[in-house]
Length: 218
Image 1: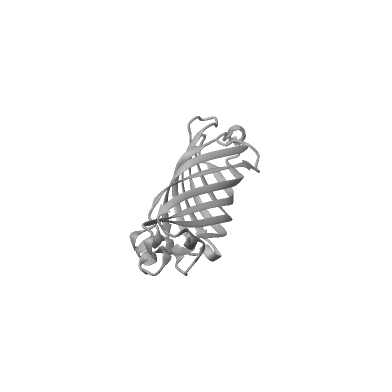
Image 2: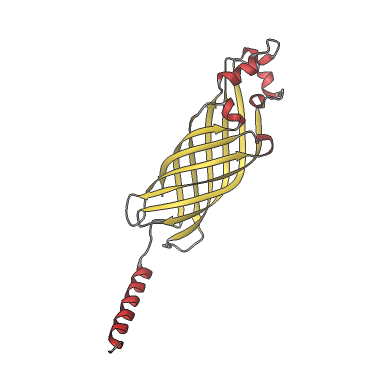
C-alpha cells in the first residue's frame, strides 16, 4: 500500500489550515480605545446600610500594548467613575437622633463617590463581533457626604459615624469584567456590558461599590 499520496494530501491540508488561521484577523479592537457608560451602583459593607442604590456614569480610555489584530490583547486603561447615593432613613436617623447635635436639623443626606483608577485590561475576541475581557487595578477614591438643612460648620467635623465623615480620600482597588459586542465585523463601535467591584482602602475601608454598566466603546 502506498502511503505517500495520503500523507502528501494531509500535509497540504494542514498547511492550508495553518495559512488560513494565520490570515484570520480579529479586528475587533483599535490600538487606542475610549468608552462611556451609564451605571447602576449597589453599595455593600457598612455603606450598604448607609446608602441606597442609584445611577452613575463612567468614562475611560487607553491604548493597546500588543499588536493589532491579535485574538488576545492587553490594554492599559484609565477609568473614572461617579455616583451619588441617597442616605437611608436609618442612617440619617442615627445622625439626627441627638437633639443637641448641630446635625439634628438635617432633613436628608447623600454620598458622592468618585474613583479614578489605572486598569490593565485583557481582552479576548471570540469572533470578529463578540469578545470578553477582565480588568483590575488601583487608584484614588473620594467619598463625600453632604446634609440638607444642616449647620454648614458641622460639615467639616466628624463624630465617628461613617456617614458623618464629610470628605475622605483614599486608595481603592477594583476588579471586574464584561462582554463587548461589535456593531460591525471589522472593528468600529462596540456596545459593552460590565460588572466591577470597587473596594476602598484605609479611611474608606467601609466602602464597597458594585457598579453594573452598559455603554459604548470605540
